Length: 172
Image 1 (spheres, rainbow, N blue to C red):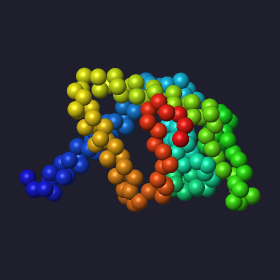
Image 2 (image 1 turned 120 degrees about the vertical axis):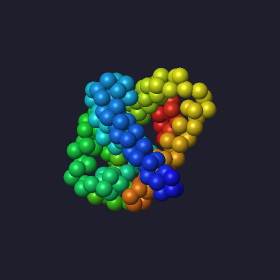
Image 3 (image 1 turned 60 degrees about the horizontal axis):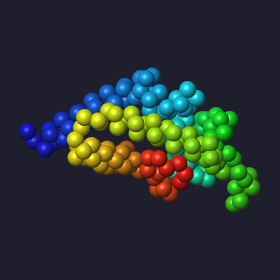
Image 4 (image 1 turned 180 degrees about the vertical axis):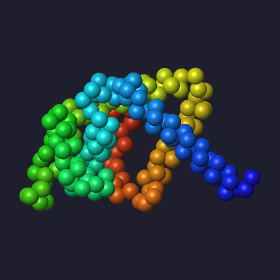
């Protein structure tokens, strides 16, 4: 088998595994386990938006829209939902009095910490029978893969995160 055929087979296996993983992650029981108590109030997109604001904040709504490659009018109601739940707050932008900056509230940090703890618990249980070297290898390869995906099919417009919280940390 040629290198190209091997790569295609690997790509097909990754695509199949990714499809199955997405299907699994969208199951109601899994979503509740991944998000914990927040599952009833937050959509997966709400969690992604909250993580982005936490990692890169304070940020403008226009920056969030640009990073997600959508129109500002798409992000505005999503941000409003996070504000209504007390997870993010607006503050004036000292560099532009017409603009507002979004920051994560203490409640938002606690919510993310709880979500992270629930997710870690789920994956810890899922990998319980795996030997430690396999668990570490999977973690390293998943992180490498996700980091690489940021630039596929084009470089990510997101700036590097200020801090990637490890599990159990709530603030950035």
